[in-house]
Image (tube, rainbow, N blue to C red; front, side):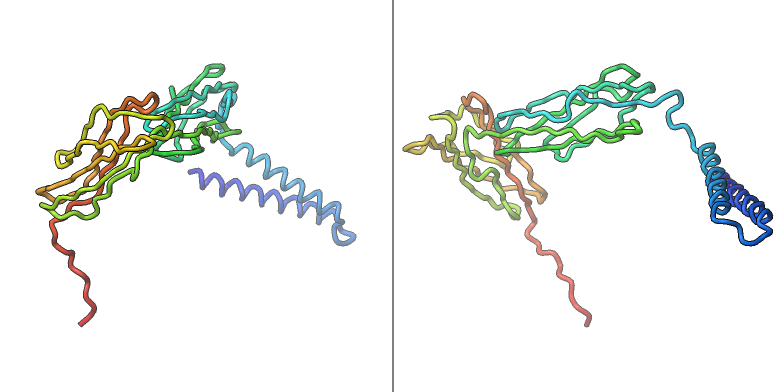
Length: 281
């Protein structure tokens, strides 16, 4: 239906243009119509087109339009520590005259989930976008973006930014244990070292694991400075093939990092080699 209306609309426009040009030509009996007459004809036709287009365009915001205005577009968390969560609420207002509808709220990283407090904000009302940064094993300076879509015709997408610096109390090397492609029935052992960075010393109070095939050997405190521990992690044997995604969680007495997490990942196979494609006989 809408396509048919537009076709009819342009037929009217071109018909009006021909009528105007014909009228100008009829008045120019003495010769070719002047530049002014031709210009007037074109302006008249374009005016008709503009009027028809305005009539055809729907009102996206009957009775007004919403406007989204944030109190701030960026927030600096400052110093945060590993394996912790920190949150901030971006406050905004609907300064328009129609209902503001929040669409998608997306972040550039899975470590920075964001959610709108409510989806519809009447004129003059206030809303929030809650953003959480999960530091995990990251370290150093970070910058993450959150995009907020709405039905504001002037500013349909707002870019919010969170920044900060992830500090390290204890360095874990390596950060994760990759078991590779371990065969069913096999056992693999790896060592992880924990070194104090911002504290003179620390203690490991408890060790937990999330996979029954994991065995964590007793942490061994190494001599000398800085304070260091050596931790053995054993995986296997496993009776069935499949992907492995597990964690070793260490509870500590650190003031800012009460838990340290070591990822254990890879794949257990049945030992059969996949068939290789052969060329034409």
